[in-house]
Length: 131
Image 1: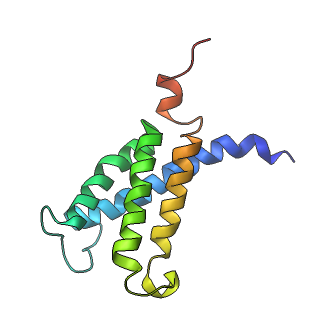
Image 2: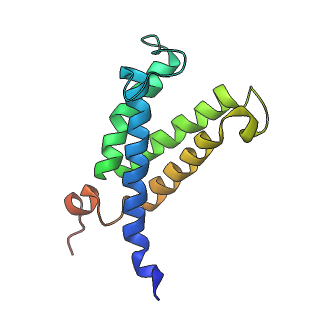
């Protein structure tokens, strides 16, 4: 079986699923939906509030595959900052500091920033190269 032919489509599916799950984190932080965030809603203009705003803006772009590389790059950077600012100081080991999801998101988003949105992205329709 030739699995390579599915790689571009699976890239798009990875982008969409990661974006949907990440949007859920943003709505939880900003709106307390679908469940209240640990520690309550972040104070306006705090670092967590800015992170949630970045997530709520960039996640829909990631889901739609519009300006995918920029959105994914910003989210990757946000997750790197989140890990080194909040998780690493607790403990050196990601399993013990709760930062394994932040690391995984960081590298998934970095991969998407490099690879692009795949064939199921608005970028591929809007910015299609005309020969």
